[in-house]
Length: 488
Image: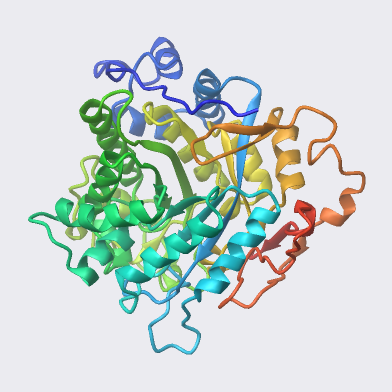
């Protein structure tokens, strides 16, 4: 069974009701039914004033209106980080290396192709391929890589090269073009011709300039990030959007981030037509993981002598809903952390489902939050559990690794009250698991799926995190990835 890809967008967005009380029950019903659009001010009020469970119920209602009551999806893919050499110096990253570091690497073509071969052996359909921004790799290196992948595995969807990588491609390769948009197109078009199928939303972080300058040294601006995605949409590629929160930003910065994604999606729908071009297919948010990162060395607000925890967090003082806050608005901005736990994560995800009325899918971030908070996320606006991830290197470098094989992810979805279904990158359902032969229903002994706590399986320069060294070519998904929990 393969469902058709979805186009749920209307010719115009739902109307805004700027004078509506954001806690008015009739107004909230309209938002949950897709008949009214939240303003940034109303979203901020909901964040502060609506109980978490009420916000979750509204988001779940909106999700069911879009996706129905039965099926929740996942994808079998592999996250391939082809190099860890990177010119950016993001303070939240524990993965990047300089070119001359002893553990810097760039994978050879044969090693990359072997990773794809292992994915195909377990029924995988997609690779998520991102790396550091390595100035030593010419454009031809990427073109040959894509060509080799598509020649050997034409059925595999290549979801690759996030916006910061494209901006560095422009800087490294100096392509022709009068504007940044023209230059991006000059780089992206040959990559599409070589086999690039869609663009992932990595590097979104937080769009507000004051925050972005503090945490993403050398990384592209929000305008550049959004411009890369607009070029992708004009070329017919679908993309995802992301947000990493729970560090120095304020709540208003998160809402501004959502607003920018929604605005640029509105523009794509309007300019490219209801059935034309690409779109942001999905939005995924996750909390910052502090271990082994420079940003993680900051103290929490209230932990330094002179802090007054009764006063607002510096990030909230600086944050503006239009993104114009400046570091001058608070002397300790960028020097204090406010990490996000499960409550904040679920509240953020629920609000994203209600605010992003023009985006099809909201993904639950079990990779950072753990399997069971990811499962709860299916009741807080998420319709998708993301990836049965054979490999993950970036988040795991920051000390958090949660890995799920296919039976386990199916069980989590089913125990949340839904039918699990494998999907592709376009969110078409490939295999709904109704019958007794479903990956989870076929398991007789769950003891072999117990977590291996606080145990890293692989060398970080090859297969850090979720580890494919369990891999076989038997096609047995349970032989590939065990449930692993690290860094709690």
